[in-house]
Image (cartoon, rainbow, N blue to C red; front, side):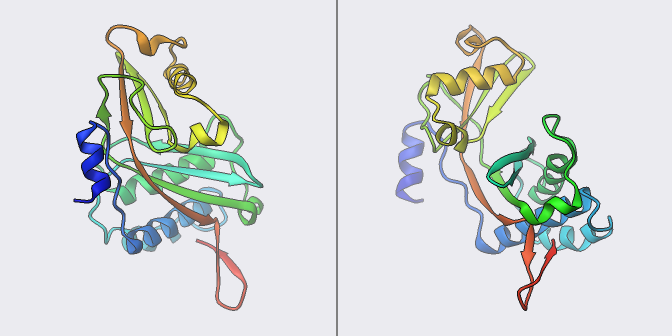
Length: 213
């Protein structure tokens, strides 16, 4: 156990998420292929080999995939199922970010060369007795009230210059609730950590060319 993990455990906060280098490479390759297939730049059977390769890791975790085009968000979707094989979650999240994020039109094949793909593997959700006891830029948060739930990844706070109350209000609104509902009796706030990694949607090929996936 690392000192970071011990300190987090003592404070009742989530510890770091461990995803080894080989698993990161496999999951990024899978996300690239899933984006290319979902954008119809590659045939659907191209996903089979990437799924098989990524299944070498037995990690089970929730996952998000974020697409960025020319520095701007282009899609971000996640699969919240901590007992699901992480490669399944990454493949589905990547496809959803490409074609099903309601904030954006579907990604077209010609956009792939301008896209960056980030994969976030989520660690366990830790319930907080104090809804303000999480760490800006380190922890993501979930606000839940009844059957409604809103989530924000750790990087949202620093990328947008948000404080803790603003983050909680935004997560609450994402749950379809009025801002401030995280203070209501029965509301729960959870913190979680992520392991985030990524790269261009079109992977470099030997000789300086490139190909999707």
